[in-house]
Length: 159
Image (cartoon, rainbow, N blue to C red; front, side):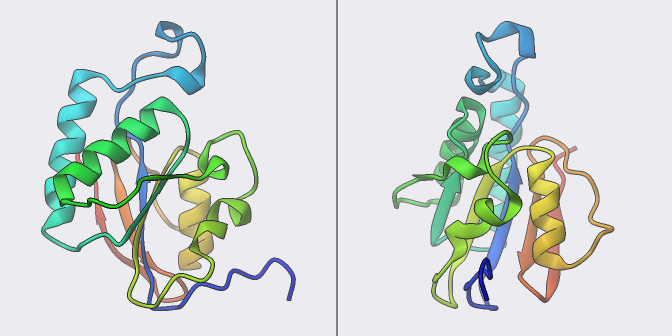
């Protein structure tokens, strides 16, 4: 079937909304917004919490500065030492939910994948993977762990 995502059902997907960034007017464009000092500290705490629950095998991120910085902090805190991979469709303005999730295609069953992205895409990805329309909103720095087709496994909201 065209458009079907071919990931293994045992893949654990961590959907991560970027941490707190500077105001829209502080940067030359939305794509250039960077994390605040508080946003960096928040993500360090999130990374520490995630490291107690799982170990990453893959990390994909939006190309936007705040997502890249969030991914770098998450990787450092969880001890992830592989390549951080930019997936353009994880950016809020590019592509569909299916295109954003295409980075999961063909991953081994034992994969634990972090996808660092933005609202509203992170929520639509959570609904698509979990099948649960009631998935709550994502605050900055939030993580939602989903096994595709089996639903939400856990959430971490740093607030």
